[in-house]
Image 1 (cartoon, one colour):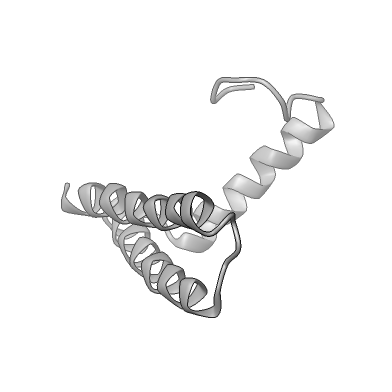
Image 2 (cartoon, helix red, strand yellow; image 1 turned 60 degrees about the vertical axis):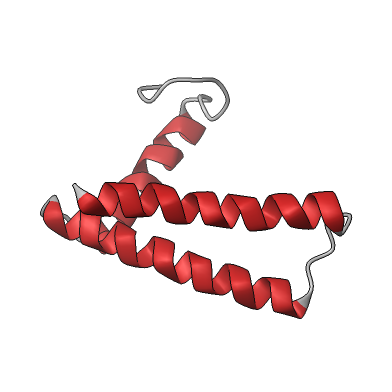
Amino acid sequence: MYPVLGLAGETGEVAEKIKKILRDKDGVVSDEDREEIKKELGDVLWYLSRLSAEMGLSLEDVAQSNIEKLFSRLERGKIQGEGDNR
């Protein structure tokens, strides 16, 4: 599935930009950095939307499901820890 590979690559590019800001700029994000990260996040969003569509899911449904999952974890005191099914 092409979108999965694209998503992984683009999120890696976001991480690389953040890493270099931390390493080379003491974590100070310039306006230029912000614009470059915005471009990469746009690519992440595009691949995420393509992957969601291929799975027959809307981004709205994915987001709503995640919000419900996180609120459930919060209510049960399971925000911290590991594992998908906390």
